[in-house]
Length: 228
Image (cartoon, rainbow, N blue to C red; front, side, top):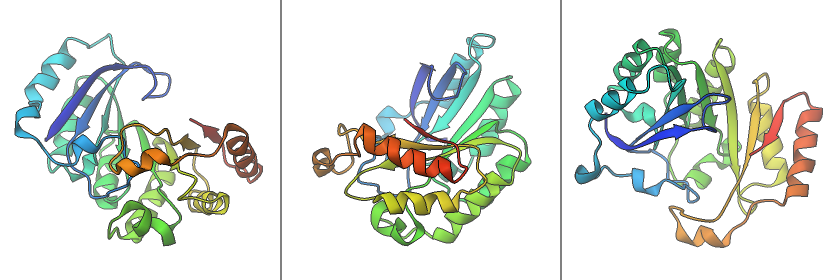
C-alpha cells in the first residue's frame, strides 16, 4: 500500500462513528477542485509504512470505532483488499471512499464482506464526466459501480462536489437519475482553498438558499438529499 497520510481521529468522516483515516497515493482523475493534490504522486520521503498504521491501530482497539480508507483513489492499490482484511480482522468498521472507476474491485470488496460503508463521488452527468475530471474515464465503469453499490446490502452514500461554473441545477438533477434507489445523496459545497488547479480558487459554489432549493427538488423525487 502506498500510504500518504494518517489522520488519527475524525468525528465526521464515518457517520456517527469515531474514526481514523488512511489516505492512499494515486488517482486516475484530475478534478481541478481536488483538495488533496499532494496525493497524486507518491513521494518516497513521505510514504507511511503499513506497519506504522497497524501499530497505531493496535493502540486504538476499543477506542476508535472505524477506519476510513480514502485518497487519492484507494482502488488503485494492488494490495487494498489484503490491507482492508487486516483492519477488519482487528475489529474495526471499515469505510471506503471511491470515485467508482473500478467496479470489479469494488464488487470483490463487497462480496468479501470487508466493508461496512461506501462513499462514492459522482462527479457529473455521464456526458460531462471526461471534461470535469480531465480524464479518459470509462463512464460505463461509473454506472456499474453505482449499480453495484445500490444493489448491495452495504450502507452507503453518493456525493457531488458542487462548483457552480461546472454543474448547472439540471446537471445535478441528472446525477440523481443515475443514483435512484440509493440511501442518501450529499451536495458538497465547494470551498476555495487548496486545489489541484489554483485558478479554481476564483470559482464558487451555489449559495445556501440555492442549495436548499436544489435539495428540495431532489427530495420531492424521493431521494434523501443533504448539504455538506
